Amino acid sequence: MTRRVVLIGHPVAHSLSGAMQQAAFDAQGIDATYELWDRPPVQLGETIAQLRTDEFLGANVTIPHKERVVPMVDRLTEDAHATGAVNTITKEGKRLVGHNTDVPGFRVALDRLVGKQKMPRQAVVLGSGGGARAVVHGLITEAFQRVIVFNRHLHRAEGMVKHFGRSAAHMELRAMPWHESIIEAELAKTKVLVNATSIGLVTDESPVPAEIIPPELLVLDLIYSRTKLLRDAESAGCTVQDGELMLLHQGAAAFTLWTGQPAPIDLMQAKLAEARAGGLRSAEGEPAGPGLEGAASAAADTAG
Ligand code: NDP
Image (cartoon, rainbow, N blue to C red; front, side, top):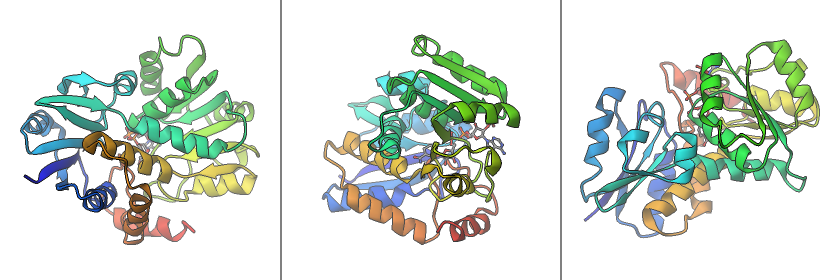
């Protein structure tokens, strides 16, 4: 029987995951299809229930469902429990297990960004959505000592900080209001900046003005392209990294969870690049609004 793996999101049409996962199944001789399921929140419960039948191997979950799906599975892994977000579902018979492979994906991206330097201990995180939760959990478990979170809606950042309360008891994890002068002061004190907002995804905008980016910062943008933030940071003398590695490695980890086999990373990376060259540029969690194609190709033109 051909098994099915589905990506559940709303919308999902622009996701890059389909190209890399189907190619990986085919290359490893796994009789499975990877399907994109666009399901609004109101249909999430019945959609997750469908996965319990034998034909399904598992699922990916993306925007806007990663947090909502948590109470709908039977068991959470440590990363899913800690983040309060699920991006991958596997099966144990009819039981559903929720994982968060954004966390290992982020760790690979952070390690590559830091390179041979000593792992820093201070970071500024912009954003408080599902992606930011994986980032903050990754920083806590990498033994960062001071992590400051800025978000447009402060209450969401405060909620996230509260969520991590116990696991961050040994360190300083704080939410601060999104004011340029406060961000500037914090950037001057930090070593790592992570953009986990979607600013720069469909328009060529940066979450912070170029003038307040200090040199020698390590800057990671979860967005899978050379965003204005990364270009500005590079001009300021920073080391930069985009979201490609995180996307690739969250996908590779999910592949291994479904199949029990090592993921064909090089092939998956090539398929991501191919899909992106063909016009798709959505990282997981991208809200693909109207007019995306125009904005995306404009952004891709500047992507170098
Ligand atoms: P969410 O929708 O959960 O969160 C979006 C975040 O962006 C929120 O913090 C939101 O702030 C902020 N934001 C959006 N628009 C604005 C704006 N105009 N001004 C200020 N803040 C804004 O999305 P995710 O966390 O899932 O994804 C965030 C980004 O990370 C996306 O670009 C996504 O593609 C990327 N991502 C990449 C991954 C990868 O593998 N490379 C994995 C996961 C995410 P507020 O709460 O105030 O609305």
